[in-house]
Length: 106
Image 1 (tube, one colour):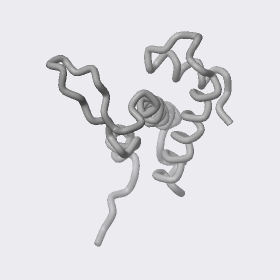
Image 2 (image 1 turned 30 degrees about the horizontal axis):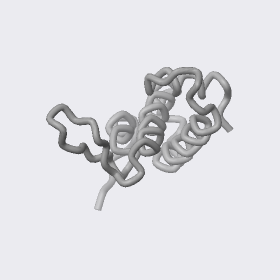
Image 3 (image 1 turned 180 degrees about the vertical axis):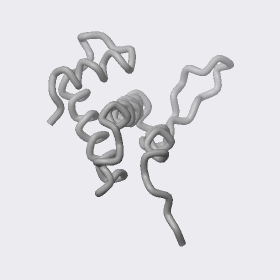
Image 4 (image 1 turned 90 degrees about the vertical axis):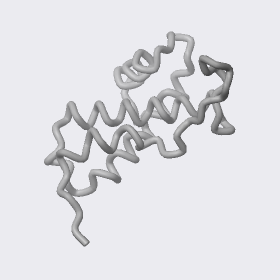
């Protein structure tokens, strides 16, 4: 369960205001924390807390962004064309975490 401080940090990170739904932000933070935790796996001790928290915020911001674009397209691009929202909320969190995790071998 996300703490009030974590929810507030997420709301500030996504540029929201206090009227943003705390329950939705808390849910997004919890989802992101679970995704990041699953990605890190048993190597949690190798990832500094600040790096993990940053990755969770990145992932949670993508989960929050999906609320405004449920069909996968945002409607406010510079030239009027729609902009796709990444389907994978971990797309920006993985590069943050990868330097602290062992590389895979085939």
